[in-house]
Image (cartoon, rainbow, N blue to C red; front, side):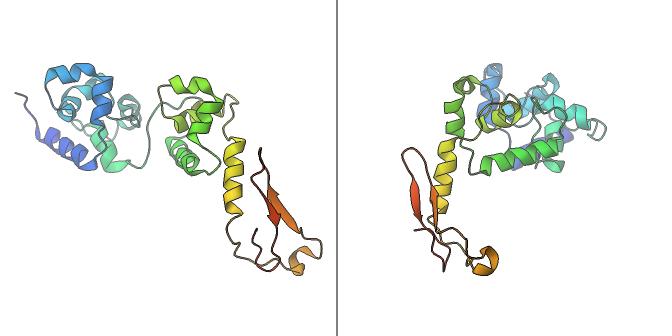
Length: 208
């Protein structure tokens, strides 16, 4: 039977309500917790936090505490403080980007994940050793791949994206006022084998 303080109960509620505690991750990283018989969240709040265990793959308890120890309450759980104040950011090891802030890294990671030229499967295919890395693919590409000079964007992803874009109508009209009389008559995106090659519609600017 464990005894919970008012702070413990408040922090546990914040953690549960957030949905950010990854139980599967916590048990995988800390197999002894399952043997303890305690609920993983209760174990983290009472014991795990003091042992620098992490509640999910995007939050490093030790890093966050060292950054915000001057504003975290005396009995407040660092992860609960994060949820209540900074849950839009990721706090993990910075890899080769030590000089950058967590705000910059978080923004860059979110943009990389949405960038049409980046494909996680292609990144692993071009860098086979990454498959054994103990971190998400996109994070590895940002924190290590770029700095190590690895291939980040595959030609296949670039061609695929540009080929799909050429199937859409362009919402502007090409006129002589912009290009004179020398604007291109054709446009193509080429791969191996060829993906697309077609004429440029001078009235709508669409590819066909």
